[in-house]
Image 1: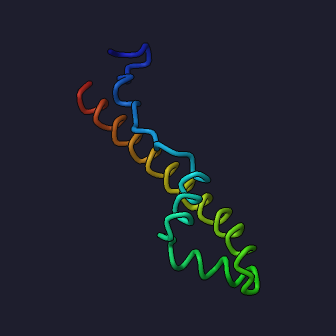
Image 2 (image 1 turned 90 degrees about the horizontal axis):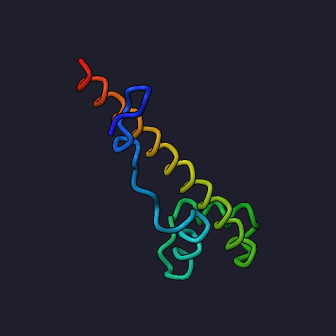
Length: 89
């Protein structure tokens, strides 16, 4: 299906993450499968206090997940637009 501006709506349908970034970070903590560098940074920021480190980990990791998701979505959209442009030639 083509939009008025010439781009396919199908090309814009990027897969969406199942969980929001905070839920994903929380699941990592619950499962004990944390990103080591992020956990170490969180521990450092919290002066070794594990309770505060968990809160800091959630903040840091959810931000990382959000950035990577946004970046992947932008990349996907750019690729889809480029593919549509090729088809229109």
